[in-house]
Image (cartoon, rainbow, N blue to C red; front, side, top):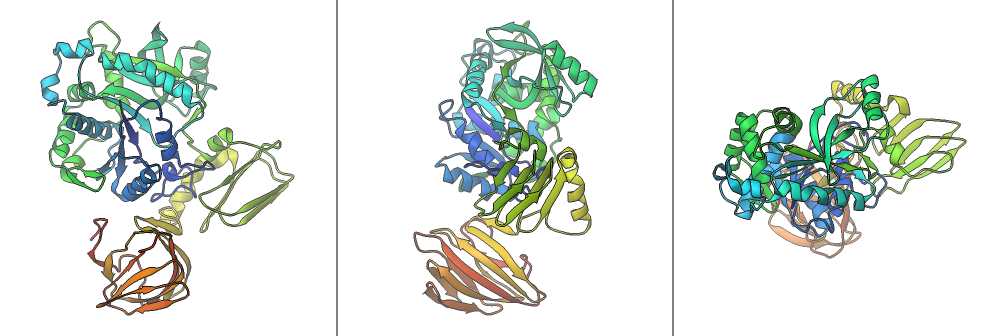
Length: 502
C-alpha cells in the first residue's frame, strides 16, 4: 500500500499564518510537527512504503525539507499547474505502476480475470490530504486496514467521517448495505442546506466525505479512462516524458496543462456509483469505512479553535513555528490567540480570533472567520504581498527574514543550514554587506574565496559574482545589508546552483 499525500493546496482560510507560498499543510498549528509531518507519522505501522507526495513547483523544497526532518524518503511529484485531485491521483497511479513494474495499464483493462480475483500485483494507493487533523491514529489505521482486502479485490474504498453535527460545509456519502463493518456507497452528494444536513444526520445513513480514498492503481486508471478519457490521455502524455532530479519528478508541463480540471469525486466516484457497473459485475463498486477519530479538515480558524486544547475559560493559544511570543488573556473567554514573536494581550473579550505574525495581524469574531478571504482579496487588490508570503521566507538552503527596509536599503537576517550553499550569483543594482553573527561563512567574492567567522564582515560590490556557503556543522547566522537603486528578489543572475534553480 503506497501512501499518496496531496500537498498541493495553497488556500487562504487560515491567513495570515497560511500564505500562498507557505500554506497550512506546512504549518505546525500548535503541534510539534507540521500537518504534513503528522500525516506521514500517522502511517507508522500501517504502511512502510515510501510515500508519493503531490506538490506544486513553488513548494517543492518545503516538502523535501519536511520529509528530511522525519528521515523519510519519498517521491515528490511536481504539478506544473493545479488541476484538482483526479489528475493528481492519476499521476501517482502511473508512477506507482511504473515503480512496481506492474506493466502497462492498457493490458489490465476490463475483462481481465486477475482484477476479480484480487491477486493483481498492481499497488494499492492510500490517498490522503496533507492538511487534515486526525486525533485517533489507531482508529484511522483500523478503518484503512478494513478497506484493504476489498480494494485489493478491485473495489474503490473511502473513509467516511461519522458526523457530529448537521454540517453544511462538507459533502456527504450515502451508505447502503453493510458487510463486515463496511458499507456499500449508494451516492456521493453535494454540500447540503441546513435542513437537508439535519435530515442526513437524523437518518444515520450518511457520512461526511473526508476526501480520503483507497484504490488499486490500475483500477483507478481503468475507470478514469472510461469516465474521463481526455483527462486520462493528458495524464498519460504528461507521464510519458518525465524528468527526475534529487527527489523530484517533473511531468511534461505542456501535456499536463491540457488536462481537464476535476476532482476524483466528480471524475470517477460519482459516475461509478450512479452506473453501478465496473470490473465487479453485480457487486458494489465503492465501499466506505466509517471513521470516528477526531477528524477535522481545519477549514477555518473557528474549526481550529474547536479541536485545540483550551483553558478553563475556553481560550486556545497557539505558538506558531519557532516563535517565542507570549500571551496574557485577562477576563477573556472562548477565543483563539496565535502569536509568533510578540506578547499578545487581551482584556474583556469573548469569541475572538487573534492571529499575530511578523507582518500582519488578524482580529476577527469567530462567527466571521469564513470571510477572511475578503481580506486576502483586498490585499491583492492593493498590490500587497502579505497574502503570498511571510516576512520570513524559506529557501532550500535556509531562511531569510527581512527585518528592515527603506527607499535604497534593506536589512535581512539570514540563516544557512550546515552544508548548504546559496547559488553562485550577481546583482545588477545592489551591493551587499555581510556580518557573521554566529557560525562560519565560506565566501566567494570575485576570484577570491575565504572564511568569515563570528564578528567579522565582508562587502560584495554591485556586479560582483559571489557565493555564500556554510561549511560547518552548526547553522550560520548573519546580517545582510543591501543598498542600491533596486532591491527586488528578481535582481539575481544565477550562474550555478545545487538546487537546480540556475
